[in-house]
Length: 125
View: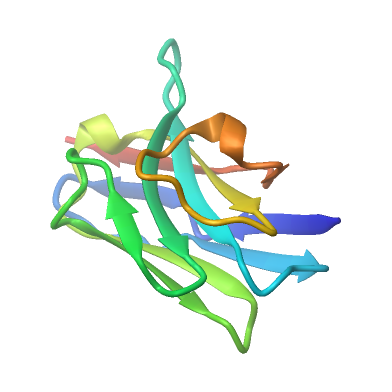
């Protein structure tokens, strides 16, 4: 079992930055894929970014160049650095993990067996 707890969301204005984090606990295998998903009211959940156990990353086109996913293995923590935020980035952001496993070419929610409770990100214009 893996437990994921997100924190670090909040409210910012257009162009601002936030860095949500996701603390993982429990048993993880040496191979894993961890990702960030988001869901806005009335919209489907979408993959934002993912990172493999070998450090390979994938980003959604809408966030590439603005968001950076990273991990601190010593702290078992996943981060999402979000810069140049836009109102359309407003959503609940969820951390997800698949272990043992590896990241697929596309981010699909059903791959991930473990999910956090989410952290709200709101961007105002």
